[in-house]
Length: 315
Length: 324
Image (cartoon, rainbow over all chains, first blue to last red; front, side):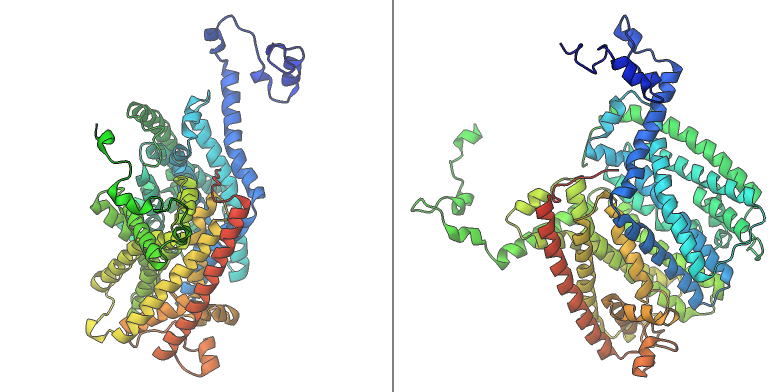
């Protein structure tokens, strides 16, 4: 009989072994009187399942870093060379050293933006194409936990690239930082990441509805966003366009705040708010994007179910 | 029913029937040579274009095709204006032409590599294409050409916007056509060769390879004199740039479209000037070096692609799908 097979639920010793595993108590098999009763989960079970979902979705991204080493070359060295090209543009123009620092900081932050675009925004569409999306929705977990897992794994992946670009470029091109407000700088950095990944979640939800448009629009969000975010120059130089970017794009406002904080000794072009105000803008963005992502996910999932788009592939 | 009324062998399939004598005609396994290759290529180009262009309406497709190269050019124009305040118009032409052409390079480089990834990871058709009677290389090139077409459109419009809106000085009467035509053709071939090299690499790597072509293009961007003269680079890096066909291609296009403009290869402090004593390479030198470096890149890319093809078959990579 299956029920009495060693290790099966209900078999002697199965409960003891499962519950002995650290953090697994919430998943221990419990006999119930009916399926309806079994479906009633305690808040702890829900929380633990979501936590495991986050860890499970982050796992392939983090582990993948160690599985195939070619990413070190393609994800770190080559983007560093790309950043270097803009450093040399400024050198050719005999720009002040501060601008080279701007480029280096921008080059480091692109790692996160690219990750948000390629591996957050597009991911649910990608999962749909691969046939995993219906499994996500069928599994007893919160899809937001999947997005958080993707964000966490993506953050780990991108951090390696960002740190590498920052360290190598700073050393090679003699960039010196002058930081007076460490706490604010660190706070702005994490708020920027939270807002970026929040935006990624919103886009991921939107892309749930789309087909190949998602792929193409993802590409559209790279260079034009670099431009309006002032990736290689102070965004205040763009005038009204820069102000609009600061109010809606976490990359623009975060980068501007970090530049003001990281090069405190150098004169900074006027036209943008102070770092403290920009930190506040980022905090608002975090809340807005997370709430929006939650709403978009629920709404668009329902609509995608109604229109039968959740399992449509290769359209 | 119509199916029942059809003959067992349709008239247009007559050539596929068994020979009169009923055996197996070995000659058929050899295919139609160049005629088949040409047909495979043309079909792949058509398919590639339809896949590239039929996902949306023409207006959105146009915006998509133009926004990327235009934004790249604008980033550089703003950088230039931030520092020089618009005091160097000749340098503005230099960066606009360089970034416009670079969109073409990115299209060529990523087009071929993405063909492999698209068909392996997304549509899962690579293995079927591979076992079809079509020449695999012709299919890869054909699909890549569609993206090159999109890239060419973006490059032309960026140049147009540069001339009309960004004040790039341009006189159509001064175009050096005898130089432009061969340089353009050789440059396209070289871009496709680099794309083939990336396709060979992507055949071996995983899903994150989507970003590899652009990463590789970013590295070439540094050494090809696209938006700044090579003279600002350290000498060994300049030397690396001089053996890249793209450097000579961009220099040749600049020279033919804007005669007398800023050179990316020569000038004070450049390795070229130190080696040759010339302020800038002559038109003949540009064409000859482009021909030589382009030939090496093309032959090398084909050899690497063939080796990658063999390894992919050996390791079962043609139908591998990955995810993370």
